[in-house]
Amino acid sequence: MSTPPAPRGFQPVILRTHGLRPDEQVAAWRGWFDSVFDLEQPEPDGAGFLAESLAWPLAGMGISQVTAPGLRVMRTRQLVRRNPVDHWSLTLGGAETQLQTPRGRVRIPAGVPFIVSLGQELVSERDADQRLQLYLSRDRLEALAGPLDAACDMPLQGMLGQLLADYMQLLARRIPQLEPEEAARLPEAIAAMVAACVQPNPDRLALAEGQMEATRLARVRRAIRAHLGSARLSPQLLCRLAGTSRSQLYRLLEGEGGVARYIQKLRLEASHAALSDDRDGRSIAQVAEACGFHDPSAFSRAFRREFGATPSEVRAAALAGHAMRPLALDGPSAPALRDWLRAF
Image (cartoon, rainbow, N blue to C red; front, top):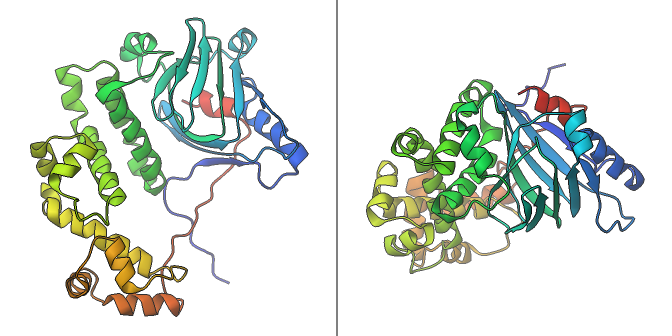
């Protein structure tokens, strides 16, 4: 009997409440946050608490992606004394956050990052959402302690704040694909990017340039995918959508064969994905048009050059059950957030 291959990639610590009885779910979620936060469900509805946390530990920091119903999170004076971990938490929420700290009350808009220190009391309340968090240890970012503390408890807005938000989203997409040896190099890059966005100076911006370029490229890619079918998709429109200059755009995509080539590449990838999905009932012509190809013959030629098969051959393979689909990865569990934080 053969042994199945081990899942590849950097495996997260996973907590899910979905397999528990509804009356056990909130207690299980509280158990993960025990001694770090107290939790309250603002409006318990008796339907349980379906939530998921994926947490990737790194050297001196960690990345967490949490999907949960509406929640009120408190770090009280008693908890600060009981568990004096004083990491920073850099958060990007999918819903507005109402934050209360010793500095006062503030509303953080959805999609805007903000920093809090776990060394202080705080109350955070928000509706159901998915949010990303970077936990940063003081030992790892000691040289940046002053600027990080000064930036606490307020929205990080402006161009660099948005760049940091985009970078966090890029991290969340990429980190499951990393091999452990690649993940070992990630903390240095994260620290450079955080330093450049929180307290920019020429040296820090230069050190984080590679991270910023990758983030800008992800922003351009997202803008292209959002407007794949538009005949108006052009370098000028991309510059406006991605918040970049024309020269910066051309420099970003120089290694991809240029702007026009990159747009066509993403359009072809999207059309291939649609034709490989046996649940997609659109005709080949409809898929092509939705992906920005308005000349069927030109689409077929470009598709075959890119993939070595015609659109109809890819569609036929999907209907025959031969299309490839990504497999979901699973990972180990852990007893509590406090142990994960203490490992930094």
